[in-house]
Length: 181
Image (cartoon, rainbow, N blue to C red; front, side, top):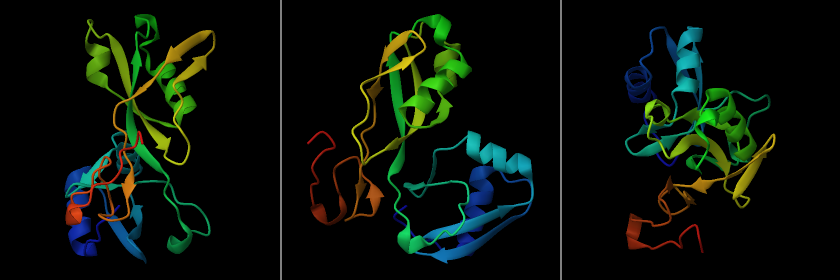
């Protein structure tokens, strides 16, 4: 998102970044979009489960193919965002429950495995796809558990620098309003 790369350079960069073991084919679709074909299913699963990918400081949005895809009609409104679940009781620090929270908030991506291993963790942290076109929830219900959530990175896509610049555009010295305003 925000940077176009020559496809040969992109393939070699992705092969290293994603640790691809099989073949990878990129087809340029225009407007910075590519179709990526992998011949190894394990590579695909690794890319999808280990994501939040950045190339040269720019977020790489990886998503499943959708029929009738047209770059000019595509609006990307979701961004990966870290969410804190403060004071989540320790018995709920399980991947199935964290996934349920993530799916309620906007779409689970992954959990902070280091937090789950830390016996002194005061909160759980998960990465979710957050829709930037609607205000994020401040809490969610999972069964009988009412849980507060805190968004840690309030990202907004900047039309000036064509990047997620966290509310401040360094390109051309323009200050953008923060996500809170």
